Image (cartoon, rainbow, N blue to C red):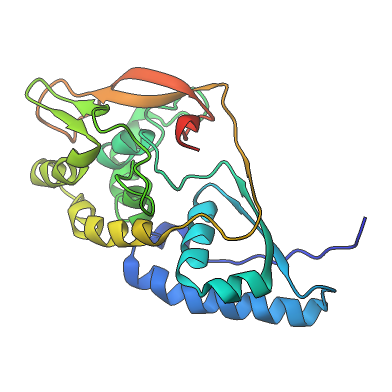
Length: 241
């Protein structure tokens, strides 16, 4: 096999979902790829990109907004491992209440820390950006009638998630970031495209993965109850990959 070299593209993953931050990252990504290719002296002058989880979203965004000719000239192939570009239903309760509340079997969070952890992570744009997304490029990855969360008064489907964020911010402190960032997140997702170079997707499909929660009242800031799981890799749902 040929020798290869690894280069890490480091970014503040907590800020993914902040449109201005994401736009600023694009030119740095381009520059770092070009610099790495020059430094390594690749025989064909091209790189293979590998991303995991939200890193896959970053790759799809960068390759979607950069010129197609630049991509073909500089990128040989793409490998996406457990991609999160369609969002995850588990993030509904992770943002509204506390991360991992639906996946406590593999990463338990002591109840005494749930409020402080939930309020802290609610300041991260990525918590909103990783909620189920109505569109990725021109594709609709989720069924229009799928219910992600429900209360005694209403259901929240894929096109209702902006309303979910509005309702959440109205009844719980420290959740105002959700509705503020949601329009920009739609712009980020609209820019994602299937790469114009060969792409491999690697994902898991055998782990029960949260897909729906129930709230006992209209208080969306309370801890919900997990009501449905489907095969996936834990945080992410494999049906949409």
